[in-house]
Image 1 (cartoon, rainbow, N blue to C red):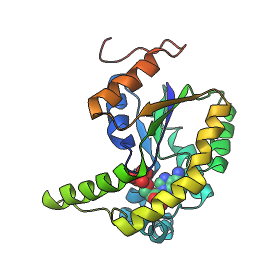
Image 2: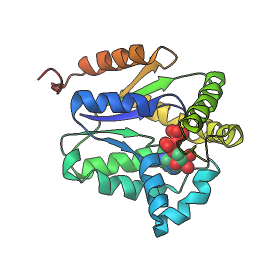
Image 3: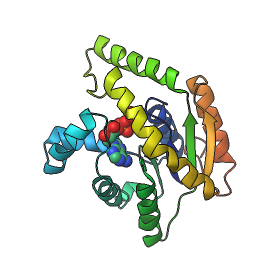
Image 4: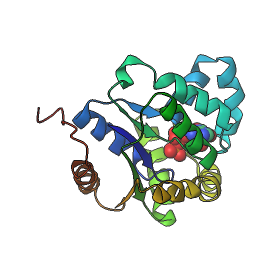
Length: 204
Ligand code: ADP
């Protein structure tokens, strides 16, 4: 099962992706996590993107496209994956289609978590407070100023990706304001209704 999870920053993509991973035994491919790892390792590409990430801007399309193209060839992604944080621009969505077509595969569904912006700002403040209170590192881009930039970037560059997938009949929208378990249930219901016959690992 090959999925894309869309939604604004703070919508709960990471939380839901982890749950889908458990149910379907497919890896979560988060470009945000991969880029943060590259930054932590101090690789050349990591240094290049650190500044952009810290300011809430998108890193160049060619950087993330090559990261994802390499990652989907790993053996653990052979039976599918859930993309979290990618694609974030229409150019990335087009590149993804090309990469998948070159491998003779395609997406099964695109799931979007819909959440309004006021709630997002509160959530992100909460995320920073919780991390700080646990003594965990707070993401540099989880502060209200940078978060506003991330929302603007989302509106301008990522929101059109929704239309890209809607036009291809792949899009399902789920209300991300519901409690976490209710969102998971609704996502699971959408996945269960897909024409393909994917077997959930937890009921196998
Ligand atoms: P969020 O919590 O906003 O979903 P992520 O962890 O997915 O954030 O991403 C953090 C940052 O990493 C983004 O603000 C951006 O700078 C960079 N990034 C992640 N994915 C992409 C992408 N597909 N294209 C460009 N930049 C990306």
